[in-house]
Length: 241
Ligand SMILES: Nc1ncnc2c1ncn2[C@@H]1O[C@H](COP(=O)(O)OP(=O)(O)OP(=O)(O)O)[C@@H](O)[C@H]1O
Picture 1 (tube, rainbow, N blue to C red):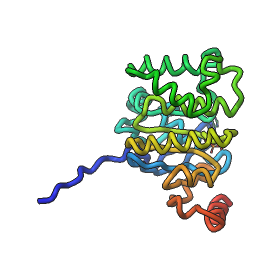
Picture 2 (picture 1 turned 180 degrees about the vertical axis):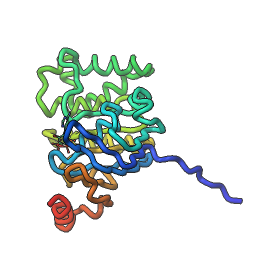
Picture 3 (picture 1 turned 90 degrees about the vertical axis):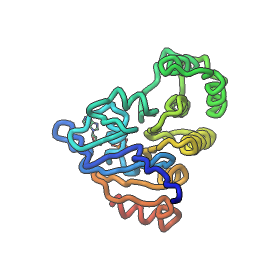
């Protein structure tokens, strides 16, 4: 009998997710599966429900209803377990204004008991062109510098599931390149990656598949190839209208 590859459960499973804030239905009926080694984009206009979905996956916002499993943990039953297994770059905030990049990485390493973290910290800081400001408090950072630092911090501990919410927003080409490398490295070591963005072209570069949301509803699941070029732009526009 030939050898059989063991069937791994998906790293992320979302079934019929609903999130309601008062009278606002932020997310309505989202289904999603992400496998280890895959990157999936969450695409959609402002207010489509991308960040809310990411916050649920990060264990920060509880689902109103539906099932959400991240790295085998149920976000409702074990949000701390989820937080331990993900790396989350929120769409805004996430950095301590009075701490330096080095202090952020030092604290993350201590909390996660990472050995020999200094070399990886230095490498990532150089990759994101933050080596020169490693010891400057982040309160003075530009928007793009803050974005780059948030992506770096999310990926630093090599999480099972990497969640990047608007990682390209206001980021220069070098930062975009570094972020694409981080996504590619994470996939290569078997992490599942989710990238929320409204930038179709960067979603295609970073991810193999995309879930398009409109007003909280899932409207299509596409292969990245279906979104390429003029034809892809047309497909995307038609999904948003
Ligand atoms: N804490 C909250 N309280 C009330 N409404 C909220 C809250 N968070 C999100 N919403 C609403 O939920 C909807 C989805 O918002 P969300 O931030 O998830 O969209 P998004 O796709 O990430 O948008 P953007 O591209 O602008 O970041 C919007 O109508 C928003 O106003």
